[in-house]
Length: 161
Image (cartoon, rainbow, N blue to C red; front, side, top):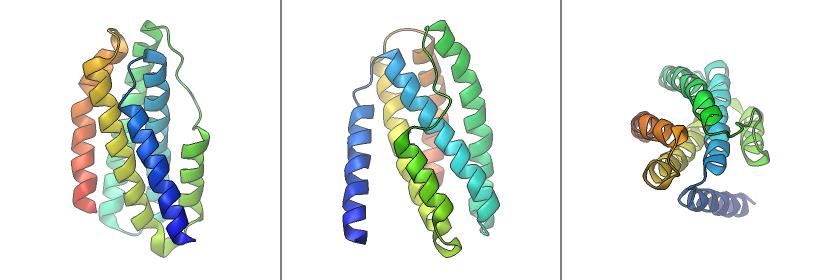
């Protein structure tokens, strides 16, 4: 059962990362970026409450601060490009958040770090591709400006893992 779950999870991750590598339209970018950002914040808020590991809590607090700021910065860029920003997680990210909520305390940190790694790998791909190939506009400027922070986050989470 665990093996099947791992295969399905790997397939979803690959498909998500592959799709992120093809995003060039503002509406697609805004949707993926906003949902990813909300997941980062909500899962990190959960980590602050549930983790007993000081390093995990510190990382989670950093993610909350940076991703809330990014979310606020994205709103006017999306408005300028006449694109709506989702305000709720999609089914995939909600399921990941629900799984984090349900996991036992001993497994929480490992699962949180794994989810952060996957999320940041996908986000770096999404923002890299969009900043290079996305339609000109404020969202492209936002992607280019935000990419170095996401790259830094990815390096941090890789260190933790």
